[in-house]
Length: 68
View 1 (cartoon, one colour):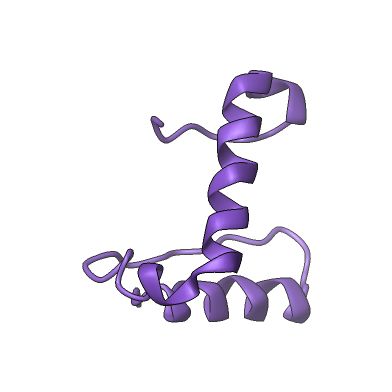
View 2 (cartoon, one colour; view 1 turned 90 degrees about the vertical axis):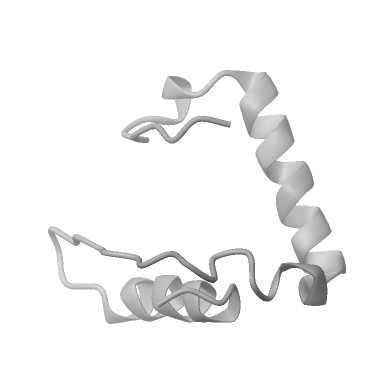
């Protein structure tokens, strides 16, 4: 899957959504298989509105996948 910007749900075809949901289910079912999936990745987030809960959930997910 190529990296794309997601502004609207309709920006991504249904097939890609299906693949994304399948991947999410697999990660939820077998999280240990993905603990180093983002080992060499660094995440940068940009929030236009303050949302501590959203920001922390994104950061936690990245850390759980091995990123920084």
